[in-house]
Length: 43
Ligand SMILES: [Zn+2]
Image (tube, rainbow, N blue to C red):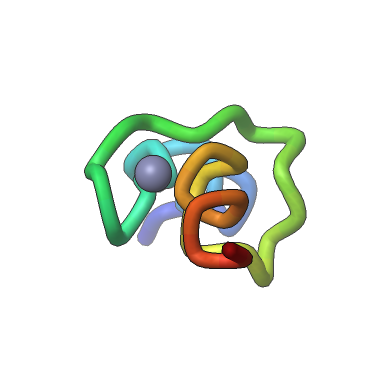
């Protein structure tokens, strides 16, 4: 049995689906691309 708090703490770092870079924890959870890739796709 793993406590729920431990489960979330051990989640892997969130990465951009386009370039694969690691995104900061404070990024909105619904974002799947880093700011750089989002800016490029917005062109
Ligand atoms: Zn990216």
